[in-house]
Length: 138
Image 1 (tube, rainbow, N blue to C red):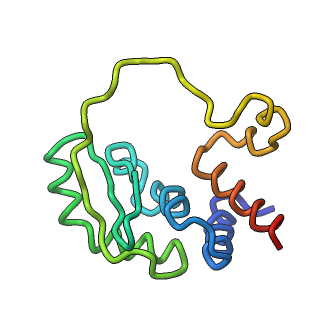
Image 2: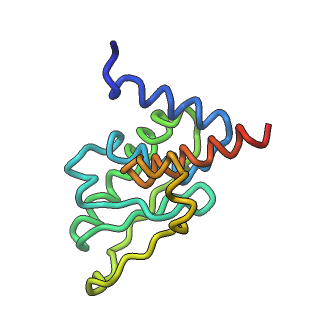
């Protein structure tokens, strides 16, 4: 049996070729492409065209990561199996909001019947739902 760390890049590449949501794909690939230390300090938030917007905790991290942008673009494109990105833009994140009540993105009645709800990673859950919708369309 092969470990999941070997299988996930293959699954991501298959999904990328199938035309799944490139933003969700890049967000899911982020920790593996940049490493856990960088991933804990910088979070991809949005893909605008071929530029990935990434939020960091501090200006010092933004500057350091900006110097690493070409290498990060290469790693993410390689992990995705195709050239999705041209650049990565780093921004300092706004101050965190005070704690509030969480709202579910899926109505409770649908959540009981949704097998994707068991997937804890929100980006992988989104990729799963997108691939499932594509299969239903075909």
